[in-house]
Image (cartoon, rainbow, N blue to C red):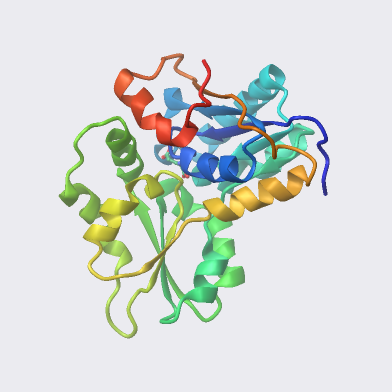
Length: 266
Ligand code: DGL
């Protein structure tokens, strides 16, 4: 389904900096695209807003961003938004969209103990969409939904160079680990912020599990949509925009380097 033959512009959107974990995988596959990363920091965290509030915020905001940046493709790198707004976005705008939703299907397929936990924001684990994924794909699997209250904020704080205590992270991930008749062996990272804390989560986990991060699969989907003719050349510029209008602090600018390399342009 290739549709772009010129240098494509890809807009990657999240409530904050978590979408960078998806962005970096896309850039690996398509370095020759133009990127605009938009963090809706003025409204972060989405996990603490109601469904109506998120729809009312995201649908018009994406419309404004499409009008301003004319992207060839928009990636909603946020589970809390994607589990709610993809249908409205596709109905409202003609641009192709790729969303990010909990990787329940691959997690249940690969779990050996058939005990899987889904770690997401409180919003994502409550969604009808997430419940349907479980009904459609969990079948023989026992799925535990874990709504983390502060983990996305902790991930942002860590990226901004603030100290985040092990206890705070351990408390958020603890409900994912069920031990009994077959213990949990797979945890779905159903919020794009959480891979930012993967080193700490690996160290703090009470036992070894597979952590499922959908970012590489999302990147492959983007690459398939772009087709073979575009976005493969030299690394082009990338921009990061904050809806608050703030520029990143020097500490954050440094932390962003691994995601953007030398391609960040203002
Ligand atoms: N990164 C977002 C997600 O994937 C949400 C974080 C938040 O704003 O609460 O769900």
